[in-house]
Image (cartoon, rainbow over all chains, first blue to last red; front, side, top):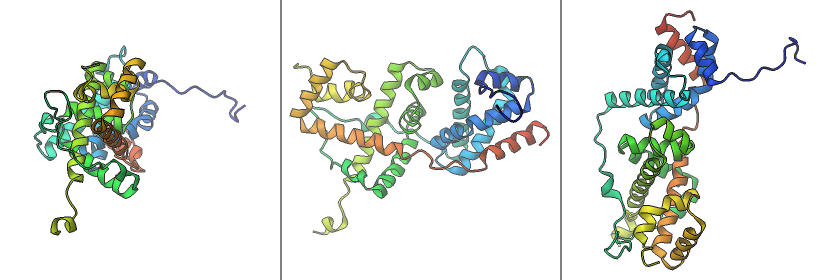
Length: 211
Length: 82
């Protein structure tokens, strides 16, 4: 038995907290912040690639939650609504920071001959180099830059699936897309990042150039 | 089996080959294809390495005072007591 004589209480569900916030319960809002701040920060970081911007976007997202909670439809899952709020905040901040032109993803897909064989020029196999932690982190940093050039529809999917490791069903629900659409976008985004990483790995070392 | 090309494998089937949703018979066919097709095997290796690399992108640390700063930010703007 606990010192105060009360049995341990089950964690309130998201919906419990939503209802608490709607009725002005300060504690419910604090619990929601505690529960979601790290995930919102990480999602924002994926879009903004900068700690300060991600922190500010996280603050804006919770302010929007506080102000707009009345518009949340309680028949839906809270997290999917809230992640969309977070993505909208992050993208609007990103647009203010630097207007971007999304890369034409088709230019980075593998090419094939008419009989279906790989026709792209063979690039060095860089995959073994990620066994070295420092190289892997360097490549990850470059991959993050490449991902920033993707159209948001692709960037969101690859970030949520490969970086955040969210489930397909949670991502599909958040982005309001079908599972086949999710897989298609994820695959193309991975093909694009793979190709960009292969290209930066093919630059010859200086001594090879001078030979 | 004539329609089982590198193109079909890489563009249409690789993701299901990797996420485990491909039927066992089809998977066995692609496995067989890869044993005979070094470019596809290399492609698969680097596709997997791409996924592993991306996992390193998750921010290593969340700012330690983030929850507190979020609460202070919202309260200041929402006119709530601190």
